[in-house]
Length: 86
Image (cartoon, rainbow, N blue to C red):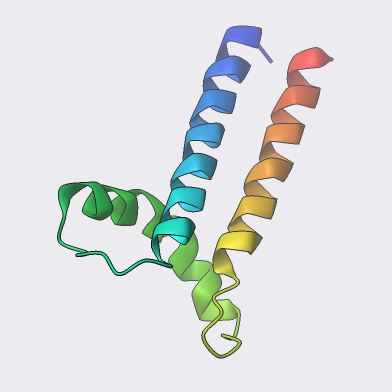
């Protein structure tokens, strides 16, 4: 894999990781979900989180979908780095 493409893909994956972590942290605070920043986070992360939510049962108030998606994204970063290095 071309190193420039791998670097671009890695930046994209890390941006998704940051967005999911931010959304998870912000979910602990009472915020207005209509704010533009929060709406942006929802639009970016929901396509990744919703399919996992449909498969994974909720554990009371705990939503495990961000952890599952983060695990998959870190796995993808690892695969991209391995493809770029060899």
